Length: 216
Image 1 (tube, helix red, strand yellow):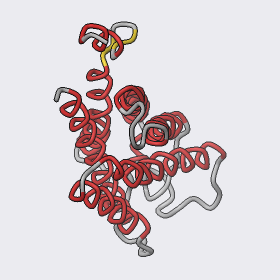
Image 2: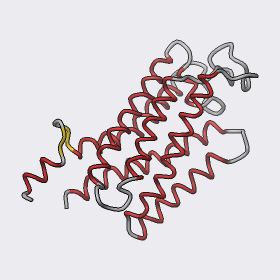
Image 3: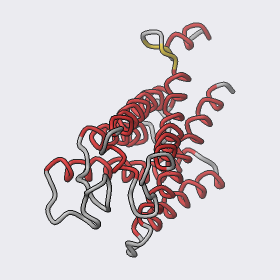
Image 4: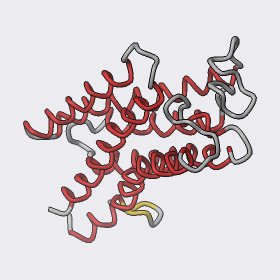
């Protein structure tokens, strides 16, 4: 097979594999960057007790909804890129599927908003609501699907790397579980950000590594 044929095989409908992987690499920086920018500029929002998901509520909530959805679409593009790049190798089946699950979960979590709580927006209960709406349950399912699937992806992709890379992937997964599952409810919103930074940072690193790997 010629190099021209290989290049054409890596491109579908004008979108190259590298472009798809770059989109996947951008999902995390966009989600956390825009979320934190809002957290520090929305009047009255307190990240120490209010999770980023609550930014989807209130006057400018559409920004965080769009953040969830666009980040999810970028993750789906990244999954398509991984499906091409990993074809026939380790993690070729479950790796892209888990990244795609991240994208679907983000979109679900964006479309289905959480209930007002923790004092946000103004007038909301100071703690958790006494009852949860169906869309708040759906939001929770989407969030768990997103970060659960990406954490498992760390373990699945570890098979592709050498000793150091595999160890780093496993440690990211373990650290994410430890941070997110810590039983103390104080500061849980901050720990969610830290856990997200770990797995999203891993996804960005692996996406860019895969692009570089394909060039050699």
